Image 1 (cartoon, rainbow, N blue to C red):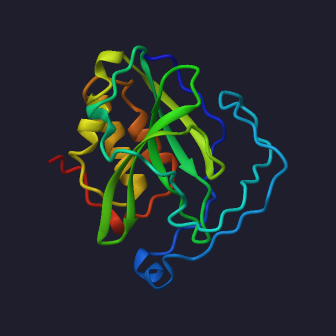
Image 2 (image 1 turned 90 degrees about the vertical axis):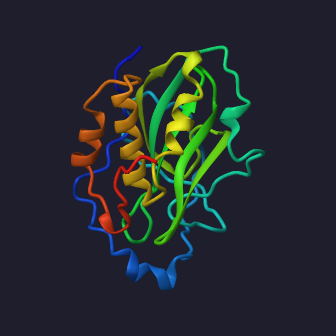
Length: 211
């Protein structure tokens, strides 16, 4: 059941064009040191456009730092008793202007979530599925509500995520959104909007070749 689209903050169209990934290989683990902030709000359904200052981290790679996960593919053991909300989350841009994208699933009114995203570098990507993660960590800049799926379909999204070749994170996330649209899990047209409203680095685009 689709409940409408909610956005915390939109990424401006004027974001600088990212450098090619071939130029980044020699400095793929560059340190990202954002300015510290005094407080953090978990209110993700407001339309506030206030200045966002993430907490500093000792290591910053590809726009994100994931928490440890207990199981690589938790959908095999998770049994939800409520519908699941589906979100697209976009990280704070790195020094090259690129942001990490991921699909997040969580139960309503919960602040712990499951992340699905493609991680790594050019030529060495892999799928990462992490459960019981903080819903909105400090490195996430925007959170976009995609829709809600029934509890019976809780394993569908992770299973379909495994069929998409790991690649640059923004394209991978868009292809998973399109897959969910084709399955009737979320309202159609969202993949097209995210593909056209944001600038993408296509150097690592492997296409939607579902395996």
